[in-house]
Image (cartoon, rainbow, N blue to C red; front, side, top):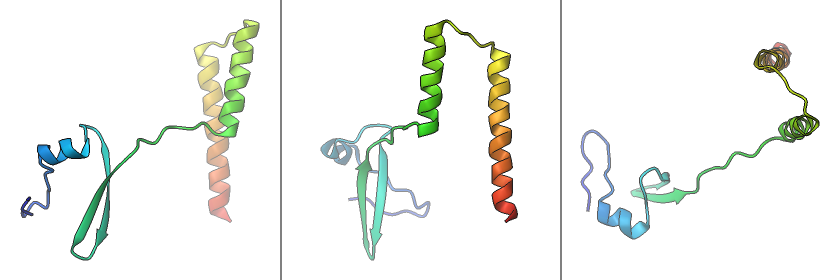
Length: 96
């Protein structure tokens, strides 16, 4: 049993954590109903590249296989250009 205190922090007793199989760093989801809170461990979201990112990865792999190289400054300039394009698209959407 745990007592709710003024700080509104709850501590899950270590024995309960062990029984539930919780480990340090696990993410928990809270579902709330009147006079009831259900705590569920959720799996870590894994990042999935977008279709455009996969295409860029394949292009990069092909360039490496051909022996092409890009300097760091060229790479960073390419990122800056993409950010400007993204920013321009976002500002157009807001203007409408």
